[in-house]
Image (cartoon, rainbow, N blue to C red; front, side, top):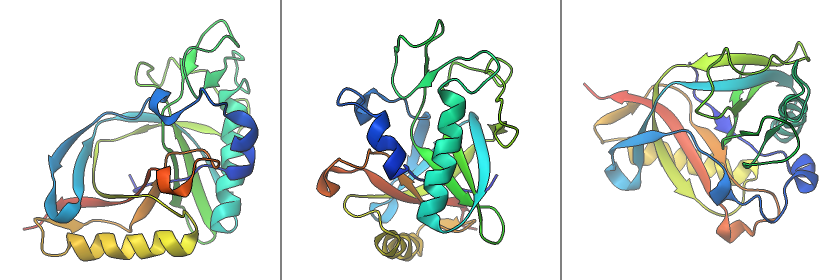
Length: 209
């Protein structure tokens, strides 16, 4: 599976989150830390389930378009009209499903991006409601190992690209080697102060020979 870049669509999230929907209340995919070389964190992620869609356009526009399309699925655009919320519990449907963070984006061909929402850990692929939108798919993700560099501040393309370069520089000379292109993970709503944001750049890795 390709590594993923996480992205939060700014315009849509402004109306979606409330003050109670803090990062601390959102489930994240479980991982174990294998190593901490050169200020990085090497994480082993287990199998996950994701809702995903493919969009075209520039980075930020693609993030927003993909987020809104997938938000349609998690907030009722599915065969059982189940609301899959950012935090749990929510009283919007008979079944309360919490969504995990982060939201993921990865290159998927020239000018195309694959956007993913990671689903709650308690659900199997068969247990999740089917999307009504044919452009939204439910997929099983295999276990993956990432080297991760955490940072705060701007999430603009220029700032993120500089962090990606730093990640590769720090990774060189460790016991790990990149097995893909660096990606970025964004965890916070747009109104959180840049200095308080949790951002990460990551790259799929294997052990160096």
